Image (tube, rainbow, N blue to C red; front, top):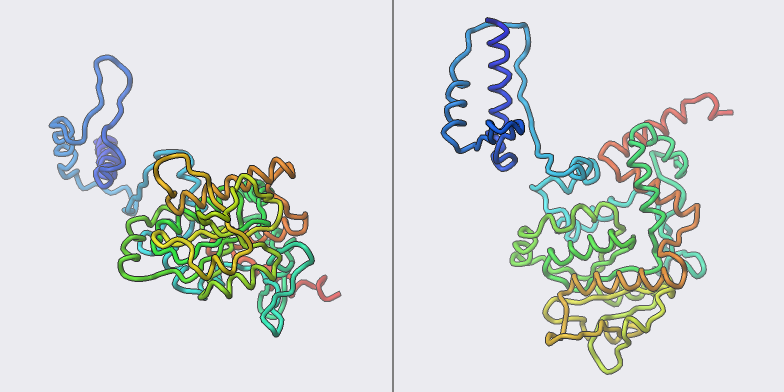
Length: 377
């Protein structure tokens, strides 16, 4: 009798977990025997089964504590890995991209490794002929850890498949071409552009004067999952003016290419994308601002073959970045161009962004290192 009761209780719990998530399962698949068929959750047969299982069981204690069971859908294997990849992207109560674009301090905290210094006149200390933003050190208290030490500290806490993913992604990353979105008001478009940038191997994106009106906020809430957590892995920089953004980009060695349909516009297929380039896309309705057109080094356009005369802004950004990758691959053999040292630093940066506990782990590692007798020799 006790075995039957335990079995009945176990089945009741399993069925109740299905009922709690009706969107996850539409039927219970049985075996492929010809006499059996799937039971629909809305069928009388299933209702009868629930009624039977809802009958109170005899009060028999096995000395086990009652626990609340949690279930989540496993529509695809990839989704089970996605839980690990996007810590804050899964929180539907927080509009992540909107929050980042309206809170500059939080954007700065997203980047963990120390960044290059700014001189008194506002210009940054950069290497000749190439831009890489990070130094090989992470500040923890009054000391610093190198990228190799960060990787050593995080090694036991990251699955091997995840570390291999980081290595593959970093191998295809580049700062030689970056994306600038100017005055976009639809956060859904910003999110889509971020997603394309991450997918195509662009590490640096810039946002100029993003409109945060109530109408635009509602637009983003309707598109909150568009980015798929891409913002977590990008270097995002916010600017209050187009001139400020362009001045800094030029000091880093970029040429500014604004997308514009005009007589002086160069086809993107005629451009040499091995030259460090900042691609600028504009507002959904107004396009590129007059100030941006005047301050840019060149105007470029995507040839249009149909009756319409423009692309959606996020689609245009995706086309531009994809062609840049194809052109660089044909000329250089690949889009990714980080040195070994830069690759290691970016892997350390990704490891620190990997989870909410990564910073605490790094701090504990630094503390153990400082307390080690070998460190004092």
